[in-house]
Length: 90
Image (tube, rainbow, N blue to C red):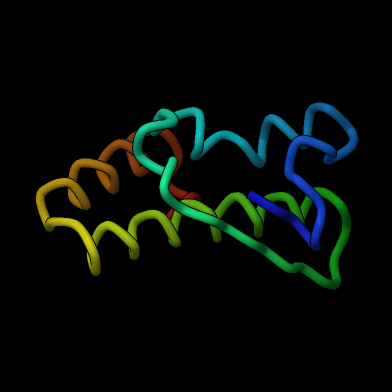
């Protein structure tokens, strides 16, 4: 997972890095291990950019599972993300 060309692990400050990793930590490594995600953000402040990346990652994983995997798995992922934090997909 890359953010503006840099690995997501290098995001500073540390708190925002964990916020960006939330969808990935919720789903576990096996759900997104085959995916290569690249996000570009401009504008706003640091926090709003991280929230935008976080939402983009969650939506991208749900869209991938809808298109390339099966509907049941997509619904399972979507329900898990919505239960944790509605703003991830809305």
